[in-house]
Image (cartoon, rainbow, N blue to C red; front, side, top):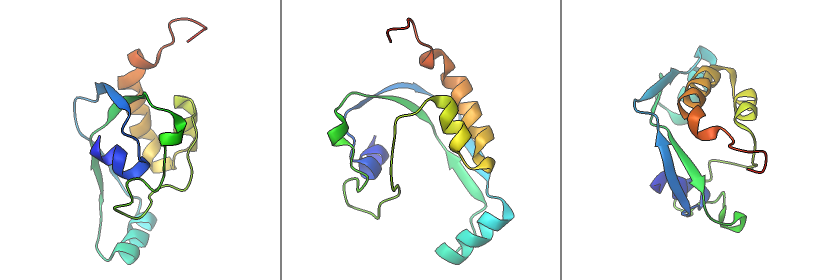
Length: 115
């Protein structure tokens, strides 16, 4: 929740589910080299913990400057379907995103057309 607030300004959310294990991915060589030049250290990849959240606030709360304690990490946002998230992700992250969506699938199913 702290990370969400720092990066998006959002504090109005509830946790619906958690991937019960840590997920990892490696950066492709060209990305790894670019990050090494940009950040000054060699990063192999990332280890992440994923949560499914329900946004309970109003869109006006979303502020990509976050809580302004750090440089903005995002330039824009939009609501989209889980399939669109995977489709728009960089190729090396798509398998991880698919795995996350598989774990969260029971929570993403619509109960009726009105949902």
